[in-house]
Image (cartoon, rainbow, N blue to C red; front, side, top):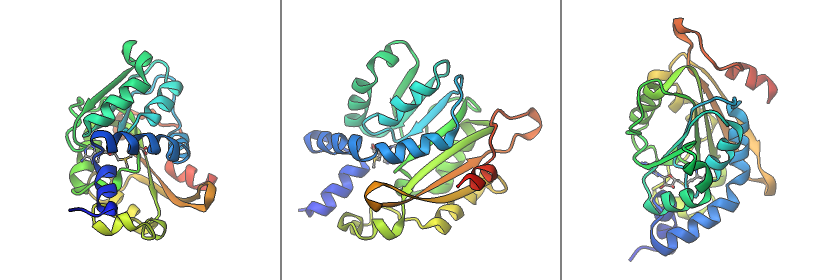
Length: 231
Ligand SMILES: C[S@@+](CC[C@H](N)C(=O)[O-])C[C@H]1O[C@@H](n2cnc3c(N)ncnc32)[C@H](O)[C@@H]1O
């Protein structure tokens, strides 16, 4: 019989059933602030096509759809429970075709090559069991000059929560997050990692990865290095 902590860790990883619906409702309230910070770091344009990894109850999708009025907002999440909550939360935009949510793993989004300008990943890197595989998928779908914004709660704060003891969450300090993002396809990309302090004093990290423009000319206007200077 799993302990309460183990059950919570598993529900955060893959919300299911009535307990998953409750966890989704809680995430919708608790994660608004980190979502807002990570979305701000994306520097969204009105015509950006955006992917959210692990959209959960759909707050990030909602925020993105408000900023990009002419782009398509895509989302993938493995949880049918979260797909139902996020779809209900974004019904009007989904009906208009501006939002496309699907049940899919992080490393197989089903999107075409180079079809996405920005990628949002809030509270999901803990579950990248095969980080290089996920990053390869992000690189495949991201257009040259595109940007990724990642939020994680800092390892020092996470370690105080008993549910992380079950080992389902991979924990990150700034150095670990930078090391993960710098491997594989984004080696040599512009990467910034900055600490943020949320209300109630919770410490988090926002990482921004700017994919190189290559010869084709990119669309991202603010480099991660410039973002670092703003921090
Ligand atoms: C802690 S929740 C975060 C949800 C949302 N981003 C937020 O901050 O409120 C993690 C989400 O990632 C999804 N997830 C975890 N592992 C996944 C995987 N391998 N592929 C797709 N989705 C995954 C879960 O179903 C869950 O909805």
